[in-house]
Each structure stands twice: as structure tokens, then as C-alpha cells.
Length: 275
Length: 275
Image (cartoon, rainbow over all chains, first blue to last red; front, top):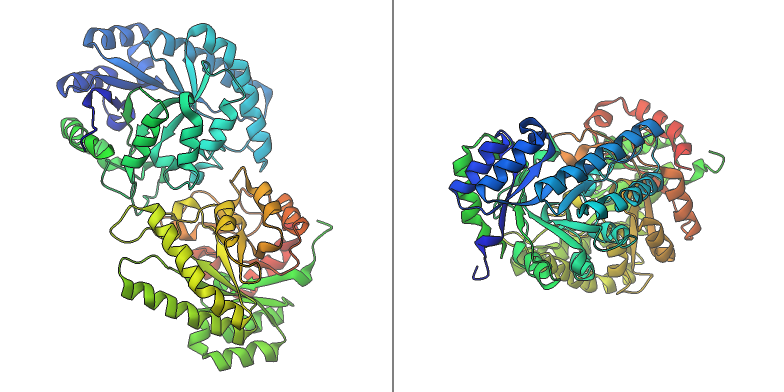
């Protein structure tokens, strides 16, 4: 626990998803959390200009914007709309001073079982967005999601796969997110973290708990509540050269219904367990 | 669908888990299913000698015995008991004429979050069982389970990982099982199937369906009901040289409560979709 650096803590807004952007920002200030990971829905609700003003006035860094992606569609119209939406997301990230736009790439193309098709569609979409991202000074961060979400949310299921895709593009434009919840089980994780090096554009922590709830999206816990051995993963991410914020991102009905100040207190208390 | 060979169909007993061994054998005979994958609990219920007699009298092949494994324990006594139980399973497999004993290796060691420890414990246990398996003429088949089960059932989560472990031991003693349900999402699947070659000791099919039920163990469907693209996987397994039975193994409350003859009819009807 000696290595914990509270200055690297960021609250991902999804952890307190009942709060408005302004309320989440106030929570960070109250609990001396120096950064926040924002979600587009909440930014839109506040308005982009208002959101920018709110986080700047509070003196918070924006560690990431969540999220772009969902590139896998059966018809060209929907694919085009996804690209347009991602262009907007890049603009928002730039305005908010978020260097990183997190991408959840999308599941199988509706009506198909064709994983390679979905993967090609994702690669094509990212290729189209790269010049936009570079021009805006925003890095696209491909997130590998746990294979439990492969069919419906993200066919990119391992850090190594996200990295291989990122490596097709310039390092300043495309990186990867390491989210402990999604990748902790992978025997190749440490090799892939080392291989990722400067491609690591974000690091998110939350724990794997059991039993999974009916909505498997929500089976996450505070650091220390579950099965993940965080310190070696954090050490590997740091050793790979990642110097950015560590976001605590927890999708959990129990966390969402807890008083937000209690959640923030728990996050601060548990953060050192990640080191 | 031209490549389907009904002579390669095997019914894994777990698919009709409300039936006794004798009832499951009768079902296979009634539906011209030439082989069965047996479960130890049902064998024990019938008695080993009686089970051997029943399957032989019916003229069925035994495609596998399920299952050995669960090697990850905190104390030496429990580890020793697991080895003893696996020795017994090897003897049973030999008596039943099942060339293959399927291994579900075990999750995290209770009280720890140490994946490498669990993996070492599994490798050690298999090493201890190899001479027993060779002497009995039974092949240990390491099964990679979907990462959703990594914490509590099996830390070996990818075919490639199962294969790397199998490769530490002689090919006649240790192979791998390819179960579509567990590995379909893996971008390295086809490379790992090709690499596995003669190490493939079993091939099981069932589909990935959504939403997952509350008990994630039971979220499986008949071939064709879900998201898995079977034909390329089956083709790859065949191309790798696998010439054995294809087991239909479905853990599903809906399948379990269906009339067994209806289940067997569906299995035969859907089997060609796997080719």
C-alpha cells in the first residue's frame, strides 16, 4: 500500500450515475478527487459549454470521455450515423480537455454471427476517425470488454486484441484502455500490458464480484470486494510507462443506490489497495 | 450443411441431466445417437459395473467421462483428496471405455486472488496424474472455461492456455477439449485450434444465448439458438485432425425441463447446423 498516490485518483462518473455532472464534480471537490471521467449523456444534459465551465471552475482534470464506439451495424446508414456520433464525441472530448475518448467497439453485427466482419467494421471505423482525432488532439482508446459481452457489446475481448488493433494506427491517435474488470482473468495480461507500453491511454479499476447479478453489466464492486489481484496489474501498467489518472469505474446497483459521499469515501479508502 | 455426419454425434449426459444413466442410454438408442458422454455422478448412482454393462449392452461408445479436475485448494489435505478423486475418475473412464477424462481445473485457491498460484497447482496436479492416465490408457482433456467462470470454476480461460499447459506433457496422456460455448469469442481461436492438432481430445457444441440467466452456468442453448458461428469452428477442428465424436452438451434449465425425446429430436435436427 506504500505506492498509492491519491493525486492519480479519478472518479469515473458512471460510478455515481444518479448524479448530474455538476453534482459529480462537486463530489470530487468535496473529497479531494483531482479528476473525473465524464459520460456524454451527462455532458449533453448539462450542455457542452456548461460542462466545460463547470469542470474548469472546479479545477478538475478530465481523465477521459466515455464513450465512443458501437461501430457494428448492418446497414450503411447506421454505420454512417455511428461515425458522425463519434466525430461529435471527439469534438466534445477536445472541448472538455479530455485527452482520451474511450471506445466500446460494438458486438456482432445484428443478424449475423460473423465475428471477423464485426472486427473489420471496427477497424474501418477507427481508421476513418483517426485523422479527426489527430486534428482534435484526442486519443481514441480501444477498450477490451470481458468476453461475457462479446455478442452484444464488444467483440474485442482481450487487451492483446485491442492492442493489435491500436497498433495499426499512429500511437498519438489510438491507444488502449486497461480495465481490470474486463481483463483480470487473462493469462497473457502482463505480457500484453508490457507490450502496450505507451499505447496505454487509460487505466480503470473495479472488482469482479460473484454471484453476477441478473444484469451482468452491473456485477462490479469496489476495489477489494472481489477476486481481482490489483497490485501486480497496477505495477505492470505503471512499469509500462502509464503516467495518467486511475479511474474508479463501478457499474453496480448497490453502489449507485449508496449515498454518493459514502461511495466517494469508500473509493478513497480502497484506492490504496490497488497499489 | 452437407458435411454433417450423424455418426459423429454424441449426447453429453448433462444435456438431459434429469435422466438416470440407463434412461439416457435408452434415449440415445431410441434416437440413433451412437455415443454418450457420461457424468460421474450418474455413473456412481448406477454403479460402475452396472454402467459399463448398460452402455455395452446398448452398443454405445462412451465419448468422454465428465469430469475430473478441481485441483485448486488451500490445504494439502484437500489437494490430496482431489488427486485421489481424479485417480478414481481415471479408473472409471478406463472401465467405461472412455478414452477421455474431461478436466475442469478449478478456480482461484480459496482465500487468495493468486491466479499464478492456481495455475501452478493445476499443472502440478496434472503432472502427478499423467503416469496414472497413461497406465490406464485414458487421456486427460483440459477444458478451457469461459472467463466468466475464472474466479470460481476454472482459471484456464482460453484454448491457447489449455493447450500450452497440455504441451508440457506427453500427447497420449494430455489433450484439450474445444467447447464452442467457452471459446467462441476468442480472436486467437482458429490459430489455437490449428496449433492444437492431435491434442484435441474432445469437441463439444452448444450455443451462447442472451440474456444470461441468473445462474450463469445455465445460459446455454441448442446449436442455432444463439450467437455462435459453428461451421468454421467445426471445420477448423476437423482440419486439425480431430476424428472423434462431437458432443452436444447443454446446461440449461429450459432444456432440462423439456421432454427428453423432444430434446434428442432437436439435437439431431440441429446437429447439421454445426457443419
